[in-house]
Length: 93
Image (tube, rainbow, N blue to C red):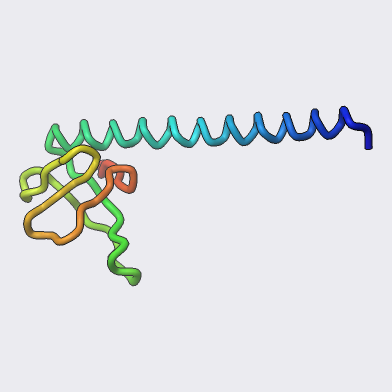
């Protein structure tokens, strides 16, 4: 294998990984903004509860149910743990 082939191979792998990581970051931050905007409009949000690892792992959050948004986290006085908006989606009717 030539010296030039190693450089080309490593460069290609680096570029593919950088593109994949960048795309993942963009998709995640876009979804977080969509979720936060929908929450502010009063739409229901589904978040994954990592506290319980059995059935019923999802929780529906709504502003009218006492949830509030603090930065990127959904917080409620009635619930112990906050939910990170990256682990949530908007409930479509």
